[in-house]
Length: 360
Ligand code: G6P
Image (cartoon, rainbow, N blue to C red; front, side, top):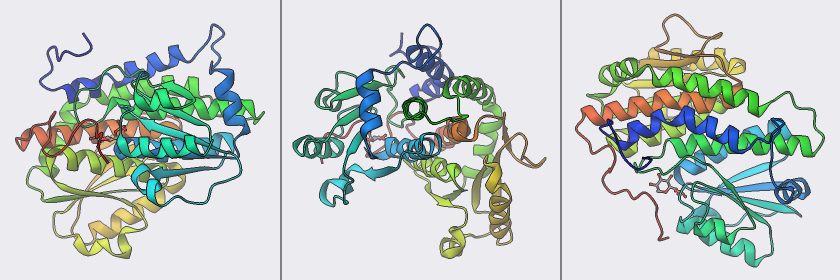
């Protein structure tokens, strides 16, 4: 069943492996008989009448929101802000005339996000919750809910819920584009099915990821992740995953920003994991890599077929640039998993962390 490990040693590995099926499941749930996206008219009109979207989330769900903003703005031309719930709660930014709030929460129970939702409803603004638990508090108290259909996520470190959130956000973005009559060439349904296949290819490369974890992370105190554009958001998630379960100090940086300070930390052998899936910034991120390699860094590159180099450690099958995050995060999840495993950490139940944080 969904809540049993079966032959897996850890829930996290099982949940990483489930990701292609989760995406395919989402595709089924969000399509009608004519292979068109079906969202309720209420959600469609709420999206359409909003002049700006405010995404509110915490942790990994916040990282999904960062990617969701990019897709929504690029595919649907709708301005989006993404906020950390606990920051928004006590330091609210100026709002637009007709905001729509989107809460992203795997559990639907996070107290920081709930605090914002209570204020938002008091102020009379519409709210949509994207969650893996439809009966949850955030789902019940919002006006609308979109279900991520990832199935129960047991491991504390979130994996399949994150990719499911991004998939649902991409469907919402495409629907938003259609509702506004925008002629987008982004076909979320088609591209998500290609991405699901690519995720499966990566899930079959566990030996490679285990070797990377051994080569780069077994003896490391720290690790840096760099990426630009969409890849920047994914390296933030990759670094969080590594921190959460392996306790290696890790940070995700915008490729161009490292040289403005943090490059001081690069020493002989410091692991630098670079994402290079975005064609338009490929040369820039390669340049950033050279900067750290010149200072002794040990580079590991995750790129995409088409703009890859022969020396890259992981090469993803080609997918739409908006959906590269769903695929590129898979090797980062696996590398974190094997690093934690071989460092003797409790992968599914890392110290100091809770699956859902219901206190502020
Ligand atoms: C906790 C978990 C994180 C999660 C965050 C937000 O801190 O340990 O993995 O990303 O809460 O949870 P949510 O259920 O709101 O997505």
